[in-house]
Length: 197
Image 1 (cartoon, rainbow, N blue to C red):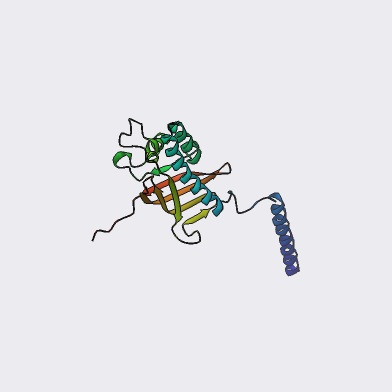
Image 2 (cartoon, helix red, strand yellow):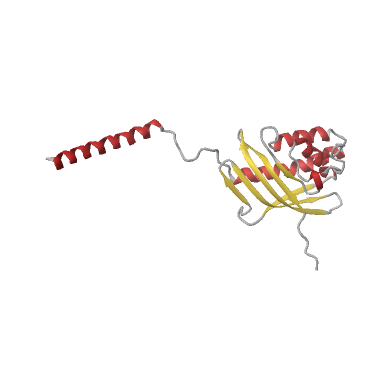
């Protein structure tokens, strides 16, 4: 009798447990493991090309006597995430206390110069450069990682001036997808190491 009662109670427990699980599933019909918007490799490549084109365009406007400072400010506010979040920016030609640029003012000064608070900045984009091209660290997007709404890039960017001189730098970019658009949240740049013989 006790065994029969135990089996009956156990069976009722299983039914209640199963019903609870079933109800829980319907309480959250839209629940998925993917909670952040995904970034595609194509979006990363487009963001990299946009950045390269922007540097060239700033120099072009400067050479033509246009409002290069206004353009630079607009470019930084559009491509970088200074307005909505934090940005870690380490330019190529920066040193000392101004090595790291955590504000949009510091970023604008690096690309366009003309800021007395950054006297060593001559305006990297004003050289001017006529082309800027990027390559990934390896074939088949090996230099790109995507983690939900954040993507990382590692590779080289080469800049060519009107005299045909080319400078290649090592680059690392971090992008965050915000409002459907990739914005730079991390930018590290350095000259390649040259081993002395």
